[in-house]
Image (cartoon, rainbow, N blue to C red):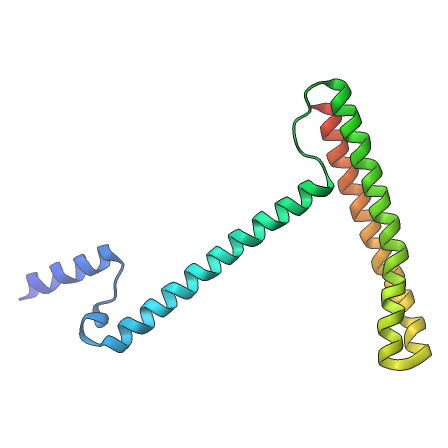
Length: 142
């Protein structure tokens, strides 16, 4: 019996199953539900990664250029898009911050929200321009 039990445990371990699942259907259902939830989380992460990559590639060109002229044009275009995104962030974030602050705390909240928005927009602008410069340089270097 001990050898048979060891073989059963080894078979269950090889299948990735739970030994208790053989004896208690509730445990089996719980195990399957956990496995399904884990797989759903993995699928969601993969979908989000694909969306992020598509969004990145729609703004900053990462496709290999066919020649030096195409690479230079792509690099400059990427840098200009980054500057435009940065300016948009500096303009839009204070407006959004002021609007949100006004709805929460009135005129004083609008002023605080605008200042916070300016800070967020400035950081976003620096980040966008930095990424654009790196991607643009890589396009020219290819």
